[in-house]
Figure 1 (tube, rainbow, N blue to C red):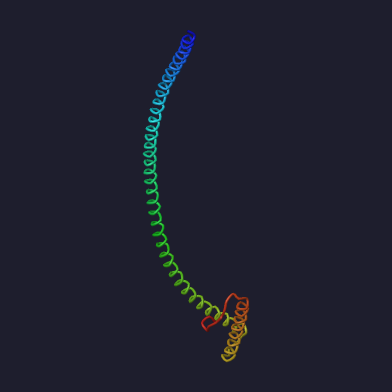
Figure 2 (cartoon, rainbow, N blue to C red; figure 1 turned 60 degrees about the horizontal axis):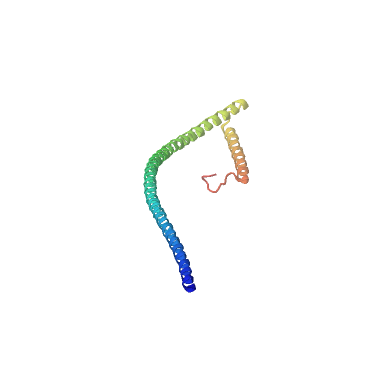
Length: 181
């Protein structure tokens, strides 16, 4: 009997172990079910996040494209205005240049006319001064007058030449041709 009792005890222990093992398996199965449910919830949440990510990406792309289009339109408007102003400035500069050339031609012509008048005035004043000199000296002889006028012009020419030479030595002007003399 001992063997049977031993066997029964052994079987009883095995049954207890088996029952214990089955309860652990049931507990593990429940836990696995819960893990599967949690995994499904997590996967669903990940899918929702991926969808939200795609929606956000599309929204940002649309928003950036919209802003870019607005900025491009503004840029094009500004460039067009600048080009119009540049064209207007160029036209104004051309007009001013033409007017300046016309004014310079007029001024150069006027300067030449005034130079001619100045020469005439100097001749008239010089002649008057010489006549006054002759009257003051009481000279009536034409030969004497010619000698004095010749010496006067020689002195004026020498004085002029001396002043001109000093100016040339300073480097302010160079006399290279007869016309410049």
